[in-house]
Image (cartoon, rainbow, N blue to C red; front, side, top):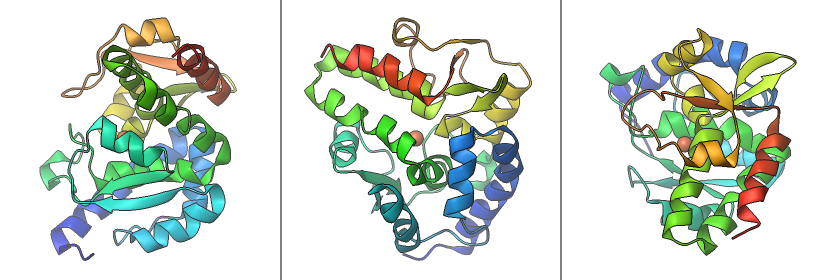
Length: 227
Ligand SMILES: [Fe+2]
């Protein structure tokens, strides 16, 4: 797959905006995975490049899709096979700070460093089996649990607030807002998370923090084991 000069320029600009922020504020697992994955700055990485690093580390595989926004059912059927879908769409240059629609910068830069880390993929692997056996109402809860953990979660690491969610790790505007204290933060529990709808069109009004990745796993298990 080849990309236009404008798409590559957008990738590079986003990379330059986000790299210092994720190195300063990303959770330990993300930063470790980011260094191991070693994404190129001057070109959009190929699927072959990504899989050469990711698959030996955790067994996961990235798969390119031309679908701009995969529905949850499709997404989790792929997830169940350790396939991570990467869209071939990238945001416009005017949307560098925020895009409501997950694009390939979000998919690659936000999520894939984590797929180098087995403790993280164990957490992600909890979602698909639960989602696929849940009813419609439970599926909405599961989407919120994923939104406020994998996409927008925070972690308290050695007393410091760190960014865990891939949606934050690929949004300079929202990282800045959260790290400057602009977003109210509450402890991550199933009950508080499923009460709050996802905030797709604007920055989140509240976010949730966990003590560590095991805290997320314990809370998810509390809900998923009952399905
Ligand atoms: Fe995402």
